[in-house]
Figure (cartoon, rainbow, N blue to C red):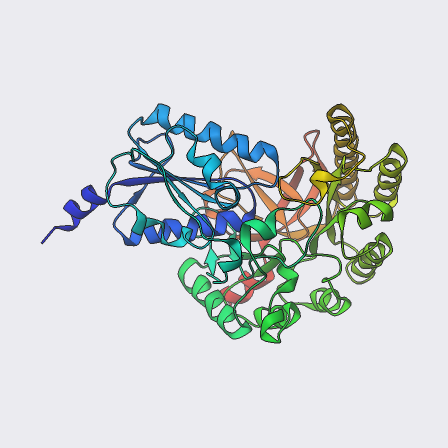
Length: 451
């Protein structure tokens, strides 16, 4: 019988690299724990691992290129390493990945959670193995969450999407919308809290607000249940579609014990014409109403916006309509995406293609607007006190944290603050856009816990 040391030596060392969204981070962490259960040691990318696992995104063309670059980098560190590729890119284009020199294994959406079972030895394959079933056969929901690798825990509560937005490959990469029941999800949340003791849990999904639809439940039901859980101070909703962010969710979060005043709501365009071409399920009037509802009940709330520029058919007039709409809208920051053609989407064959130079110019204009919006939002809160969750990364003798309404601040390095929430007064916004704070105090939750 093998000793534990012999087993560890046999199972080897594994390194992970994650591209893309919070959802991918939660899944990578879950897969990493399954490797640990098989006796592997998790190591850093540069530490000569026996196995590399690259979890891919395919939202933009750059994500695909990044995957190829990472394979090349891995082979430079260890030319004999076994390289496995999983994630959205692997589901969408498994053969394209198999053609990348050095890739040994490609697993699709249904197979990736069984990855350790596909590796029997560390010898590189003569030919790349591909295991990727048709996306319509992907119907299993695997709860996932990050652990030990970030201050916040990313908790996947939903997967897949039933929408058919013209620019998006996610339904082709992740399949139909699906989730567990509220009861099962709450039980998973209790497990996370008991194992990891996080101060904050971020709810993630492909279309998070669609949670529970096939169980005759709703995302609102889940929000109400999570708010009653003990052992965690904050819940944050990572992203939610405007048509699924109901007034009852907004109203509940305004009076919630745990849900923070921060909403990230995809818009994609401020032009109703472009929204129709994109096959979005709302017009901008609904978006405006959602923003107004949030700020009426939570005046300090942070509101983030996704926007795509350069979509086919977007004229200069359409873009300026979007720019002016966002300029006037009382939001806090933008995530700007430059449209890129994706195979097997409706948009790829649409007329009115916007040239790359124009796309880049429009993206830059909105990124500058985002910086102005963000700084204006930050400055409004100077002189105010907020609870700050402090993170564990040390940079030049300082550490960073985020307020409940997502303002980034810094203070002198103090390891006792890691994963702790302290009330702090924002005293200034520095030139680099980060807040300075003073008067670190125990949060209400921690004061009660100490009593």
